[in-house]
Amino acid sequence: MKLVIISGKDVDVVIDNKDGAAGLINAVATAFKDYSTGRVKMPQRTVIYLDNDWWGVMPCGSRNIGFSVKVVNVIEGNKARELPTTQGIVILMDDITGVPLAVINGTAMTAWRTAAATAVSIRYMARRADNVAIIGAGLQAKYHVLLLTRVFPIRKLIIYSRTRTKAIELMKVAQGRGVDAMVADTGHDAVKHADVVITATTSREPVLLGSWLHDGIHIASIGAPEINSRELDDEVIRRASVIAVDSRVAVTNETGDVIIPIRNGLITENNLIEIGEIISGLRRGRSGDNDITLFKSVGIAVEDLAAASYIYKNAESRGIGNAVEL
Image (cartoon, rainbow, N blue to C red; front, side, top):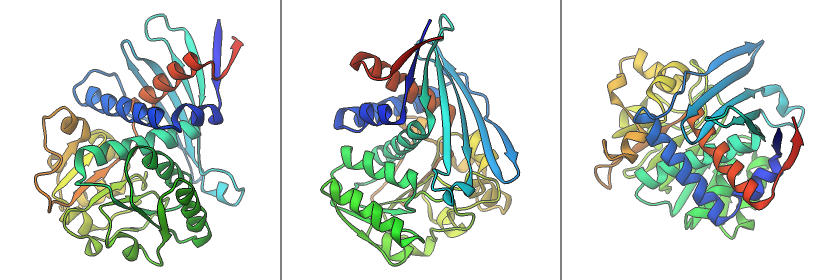
């Protein structure tokens, strides 16, 4: 039995090109649709805390796609160690035979598939993506820049981070892609002319305020993975015409960006639309140009299954990865 080991660099080679990025976005969009129409088996993730370190175990299975399990963590102390705060590993198995197929670097894969989920929301909910703002300049923000510049004709990218040196590094990455990029002095400055704003932080307090928003803007928030953490203040939630999520079950159990507004009576679960429902045409992602639209994601296992299957098939066809006897 041969198992393919796919490193982070291998994942980058598969995805970091126009066709690879577009293919991943299509795979994640299909996965969202399949999830919202009940075609996959995906229990809620198991979460364990070791002191303040967050660990998650995420299984998912779908016929003719595969079965995957991801073990992922968020370790704030890794900033001081100069390691990614989010790391993980993914195991992909054949759903028919049960044969293990691949072990994939989950850090790189998670970063790419999270950016792909944001791209899906832009495709189905944003008016346009000429001017994009990113709040945050860590690993997730970097991979958003890498993927979005492959698939959208971004004219201007504005970056804000509390750590200005990191923002400057990310600006240079974007400039290396031929994008006009700059660092903003404040979060407000970053978003005031943006078509799309992405919040990709580990902050426990809001980094995006509703008072900063203008008509027509689309927001994609990927941080605040804990029940008492928030990237978005109440006014963002109040002003959003459409609130789309990756999974109602996941967001109402995992992120303060949804749990706290529900607890305070600002919204109910009925206000939440799954992005898969928008993709399948069951719900509308935007009613008019003036709508403020929001996509809140916590990351769900069906994204990992879709990404793992896509990466494995493309790596195998191109002879990428190292096969070992199991």
